[in-house]
Amino acid sequence: MDRSEFQENTRITVTYKDSNGKLRPGNFYVYKLFDEFMIVRSTDNDGLFRKMPYEDVVKLVKTKKADRSHLFTLPDEMLEERMWKDRDTMFHYASAPGRGK
Image (cartoon, rainbow, N blue to C red; front, top):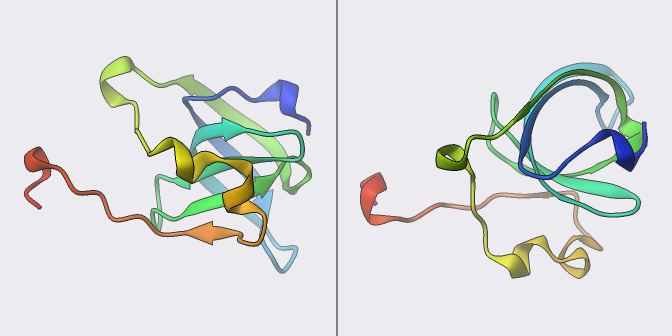
């Protein structure tokens, strides 16, 4: 697949290849698109942020634009391409008054 098939701030259901090449289903929130990869967050499993190359996505099953009230925000610095140069995953703890933290 390529970049033109994805949009930022959307929820997607896909079949993708994991690091071992095994096909897996997954639900993700797409944060940012770059030329070779996108930054996504797993919404059904571990909540990790991932650097997902477009070629790892085998099939795009469903796409849903995120409602304005359900947008996930993240500091812009964490979405810069240089931050993802040497990493594949990232865990981020959210902290907000309304979340009990």
